[in-house]
Image (cartoon, rainbow, N blue to C red; front, side):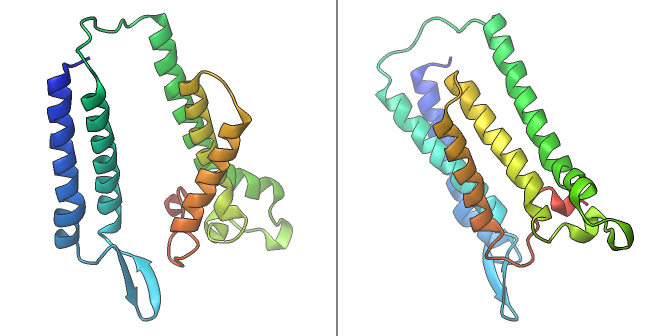
Length: 191
């Protein structure tokens, strides 16, 4: 663990850098605004992703700054890297890998098992923007990611985390998919 003073300066540095990225560099350096309208169609512009990322880094840098300001003194001992820590990181990586596998392959697998067959058979590429196929991978992978990581960090599985994970994924769908006709949720753009 770094000293309190170094943590405070790092938090300030990243908060300023993220603020400049989100509110100065991304809007001025992008061809289109975060959200723009072209021929009566609302689309996400080039500036959206760097602005959201910069805003998120700014938010968490400020939160880290406040936590460090509340910390009274420096901890002298460095935390140990033992079996428990190794297990945590391996499990963390496993949850990430499982969620990405589910996100990428659940939609095509569901279409292959339950989709139209025979003369009406379609590939996932043809069906990736239609209901329910476009949400299957995103919902399963996103739920696994949020629920798995929050349960791992808390050290226990709670039904409240399952509900909040579902609500988080549904919130992302409402923000990024419902208002925009041209957006494909991950991983549908890869097919």
